Amino acid sequence: MWRNYMTVRRGCYALLLLASFISVALYLQVALGRIAYPYQIEWIEGGIFQQVIRIIQGQSLYGLPSMEFAPALYTPLFHYLSALVASIVGHSLFALRLVSFVASLMTGMALVYAVKRYSGSWSCGLIAVGFYFSTYRYTGFWFDVGRVDGLWVMWLAWSVAVLIPFSERYSANKLMLSAIFFSLALFTKQASLFVLPFFCWLFIAGIH
Image (tube, rainbow, N blue to C red; front, side):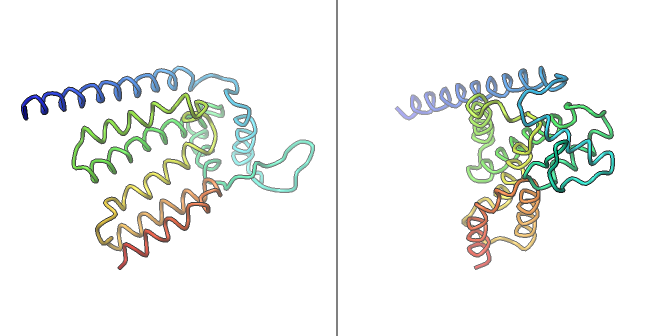
């Protein structure tokens, strides 16, 4: 009976790993297929790209709105990072999407790291990544779009991942690293303030 249980368990793990591989493969197929598309995939890409060009041209990112330009209400990190990438790969939407695409892969790595640390199983970590990328269509396909959200989620994911497991007392290095990641999330999107109480609780619990 125990042997049958282990056989069924291994079979379930194999199916979940296969589903995870398919989810990641389908995401990569779509994302890489449209990353160099020269026009807007989503309406906000054009506005953010305009701000990136202003940075490259040495103009102010924020200022009073006018008929020609009104800044988006986001903190600046994504725009400056995209401007840096654009200065290397060219002034196009590809630069913005490249930042978001790499960020989505780094989010997947954070999930693998966190789940592996929590469960002790690489298989569980890989399955977690599959679940994450399987939500791609239900989020409106924004993982790889040239907007701030992909980079923002990546910083938040790593700020939590470095503190797992939550049951142990955190070292100063872990707390500092998590605080740095959270600060980067805040400088990417101001909505990070809504999850600040959660991180404050983690820090207080980890110190004691």
